[in-house]
Amino acid sequence: MFVGLVGKPSAGKSTMFKAITLMNVDIANYPFTTIKPNSGIGFVKIKSAAVEFGKIPNPREGYFKDGWRFSPVQVVDVAGLVPGAHEGKGLGLEFLNDLSQADALIHVVDVSGSLNEKGEPVEKGTYDPSKDVRFLEHELDMWYFQIFQRAWRKFSYSINQTKENVVKAISNQFSGIKVTEEMVKEKLKKLNLLDKLIIKWTEEDLKLLTQELRKETKPIIIAANKVDVPGAKENYDKLKKDFPDYIIVPCSAEAELALKEADKHGIIKYIPGENKFEILQPEKLNEKQTKALEFVKENLLDIYSSTGVQEVMNKAVFNLLRYIALFPAGDKLADANGNVLPDCFLMPPGTTAVDFAFHLHTDLGNNFVRAVDIRTKQSMKKDAPLKHRDMIEILHSK
Image (tube, rainbow, N blue to C red):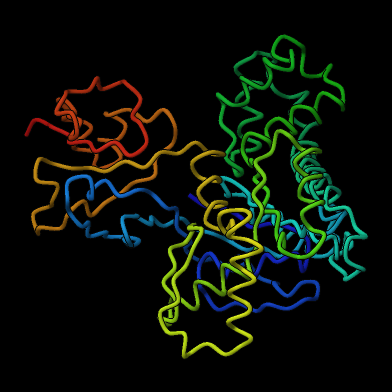
C-alpha cells in the first residue's frame, strides 16, 4: 500500500511527511523545497488484539505502545503542485508520474489562507483554501484525460466494437495507474456508455469516464493543516460546507512533529493520535517550549482531540480505502519462536478467509481446509468477508 502526500508548495507537506515518518527532510517556506519525492514509512494505529488475552505482542514490523499496534504504510511526499501541472507547469509532470502507483492521496491544504495558488505568502486569511481542493481535482482529472486522449483516436477506430474489447482496451491504457477491467466496466455502465459505439463517444463522455476512474483509483482525504493558526477554523468550517463528500481532518503537522520529537527524547510521554501528553522532564523545557506545549494543548488537543496527523493516516487507510487489519494466529497466539502475534496485515475490503490464506502463503491457499476465529473458536466460511481486527487461524492439509 502506498499513500501519496500532495498539495501546493509550502502548504506543509514536508512537515506533515516528517511528522508522520520522523525522517529528516528539508522544510522551508518557499515553493519547491521538495524536488524529488521523499519516501518513508508511516503507521496506522490499531487497538492491539494481544492485550485482550493479557499478552504483549512482538511486532515483526511496526511497533507496540500502551495497548496500540502501529502497523507500517509507505508514504511518499511529492513535489508541490501548481495550477497547470498537467501542462508541465512547475514540476507538474514529475509530480503526477510520481503518484501513478498511489492507492490514496492525502491532500495537505493550508487552511490559514496565507498562501496563494502558487504557494507564495499572502496576508493571512486572504486566500480561500477551497480553491486548492478544486484545482487539485482539476489537475488530476486532466492528467487522466490526457493519458486517454493520447491514444483515443488510434484505438477508437482500430478495436473491434465489442463490449469486451472496449473494456480491455481502456483498462490496458490505464493499467499503469491501477485501473482494472472490472472498474472500467462498472464506470461505463454507470455513464450509459457500455452500449454506445465508442466512435460516437463525445469529448464530454471521455472526460466523465476519466474523472470517474480518477475518483476510484486516486481517492482523496483532506488534511486541513495549520488549523491552530488564528482565523483558520473559519476556513476549516467552510471546507466542510463546500465539500461534504470529502473526509476532512483538522491538523497541525508542526504540533505533531513537536510532540513526537519531545516523546522521542523522553521529555514527554505521547501516543500519536491521543488528546493528551504527560511531561516527564520539565527541567529540560525552557519557557518558550513550555508555552508551546501549552498552546498545543489549548488550541488543538482540547478543541479537536488530537493534532489530526494520526487520524489522517488512519482514515486514509480504514475509512477512505476501507482496508482492514488482520492477525494470523493459533491457539497460543505465538509463533514457533514464542513471538506473540508478530504479524498484522492490512488487507482490502472484501478479503475472505481463503484470500487471506493465499496472502499468507500460496500453499496455505491451495491446501485450505477451514479457518477458525480465535476469539469465538468458531469455524468461518471460506468465502465470508473478514472483519477489521479479526484473529484467524488457517487450517490446511499437509
